[in-house]
Structure formats: C-alpha cells, structure tokens
Image (cartoon, one colour):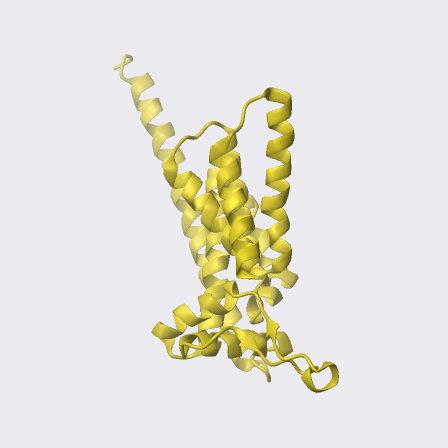
Length: 239
C-alpha cells in the first residue's frame, strides 16, 4: 500500500492540473461569449449602429467588391480638388465582402469579422501564455477595446494580423523550418499592409532587421526575408 502512495499522489496532482486547465478554458469561453453578446447588443442599440464616416466607406467598398466592381470610391472632395477617385485599403472591405456571402448583410458581416478577429487575438494569447493566458484576458475587456471592436473599423483585424505575423516571426527566428509557418507569415504580412497602409512598415522593418543581422552573422534567413519581400512587393504592386 505504501508503494502505491507516490503513484496515487501523482495521479491526484495530474487530475488537479487538468481540472485547472478545464476551468481556465471554460472561464475564458464564457467570458468571450458574454463579451460578444454585449458587443452585438451595443451595436444594435446604438443609434448609428457604431458606424462612422470611415465605416460607411468600408461598407460601400465591400458592396462594390461583392458586385464585382472595383474598390475605388468617389471622394467627397472630388468637386473641390477635381480628383476622381480614392484608393482605400482592400483588406477589411474584402473580409466584410466574404462574410456578406453568408450573412447577406454587410453591417452584420463587419461585426462578425471584428468578433472573429477578437477571437483570433484570444487564441494567440492562449498559445503564447498557455494556462496563464486567463490573466491577460482582461486586456480584451477594457472599455476602449470593446468600443473598438463594436465599431465597423479595421483596427481589430489589423491588430490580429500584426500579432499573427509577430508570432510567426518569433517561430521562424527560433529555427522553425516548416513551410506552413513561412506561408502563414507571408499571408499575415500581406493582409496587414492591405488592412491599413501603415502596416507596410512592418515587413519593411523586418527586411531591415534581417539585412542588418545577415551583415553581422553572414547568414541570411530566407524563410523570414522572402515572405517580407513578397509582402512589400504585393503592396506596391497593388498601389
């Protein structure tokens, strides 16, 4: 009997650890569902549906894309400046357009897109901090964060793909040679620069850092450099 005590103790410790993990994830899921419900409730009750002038442009562009037209929109300053069109970043409207095929409602699609991006951020937190990510979950509950997700704005999607790109960069820097990680890195960098134009500075910064590193170490990390170069090339090709 005495010989079984250490094994029994190990079993109890294992079950307790699993119990903590289960409780952590259940708490996170319930919290997230409450947060999403609150976001939709706020959006429906808001007099303007959390839609601003920029939001209107995003929705109009998504409808234009869904109709098979371009992502160019006439600008309100056309009459004054005699300019014909303004080219908006295509990433966020494209995401709305894709979800509109399911919802048949661009406004609802924009809210779902923000919620999916928020879920992606929560998943990244859980992957980075594993069982301790519950301590970082309140970041998503701050009032400014909830307001940002409620609006039909591109910031939530932008933030998600920045975090995804940085996670891939970290993985590749640690020596991962998986093609899937490099491909995901390329996709994240490309979408970042097409969601908000300022996002192109992320792959440009990575290129600069990799060039400086290669000069010092005389070793080029092509799994990082190549996706960044392609993302920048696609961006300027789009413009």
